[in-house]
Image (cartoon, rainbow, N blue to C red; front, side, top):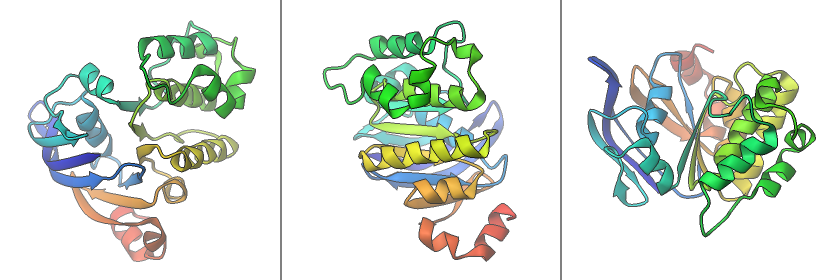
Length: 233
C-alpha cells in the first residue's frame, strides 16, 4: 500500500529526513518511535503533503504522490491527524462530523456519522457541545472521528495520546486496537512506548532523521538496551 523510497525532506534549507525508506502493507499498523526532533512528525507530513519532499518517492496505492498537493493526497485515501487539529471549535460535535462526511462523500462509505458515534460513545454523549468546549481527550477523539469520515485507506496519527489523562489514554488505545482489527492501515507516532507496543505489530525507531531499526513490537519489548540507546528509556 505504501512504499517510501529514499525520502529526503525538511524546512527551507534545514534538512530533517535523510534517505528514509520503508514499506507498509495493507491492514498493518506501524508504530514510529524516537526522541523529540528526530523527524517523526516531518515524516508524516512528508507522506501526507504538508511538507514537500526535496527528493525521493512516496508510492501510495501504486502512484507516486510525493509532488501532489495535500488535497490530492487526501482524495487518494490518506488522512493525517495532527494533535487534535482539524476540528471547528464553534461547531457542535455532530456538525463537525456531518461536515466531514459531506466533504468526503464517496461511493464506498466504510464509516458513517452513525458508525463513528457508536465507536465514540463519549462523542455521542457530547454531540451538541461545541468543539471548542471539549476536553483534550474528547477533541482528540473528534479529530480521529473526522479523519475516519474522510474514508481513508491509510490513517496517520501524530501523538494521539499526548497530554491525555491515563483513563483517556486507555480509551484511545482501545479505539486504535479496534480500528486495527477492522482492517484499517495506519502509522502511529507516539512518545508512550506502551501505546505503540499495544496497538502496532511492527515498530520503526528513528534517529537523527534516519531509520535506526525496524522490529516487531513483541521483540522490541524484550530489548531494553535498544530502547535505552535510541530512546533513553
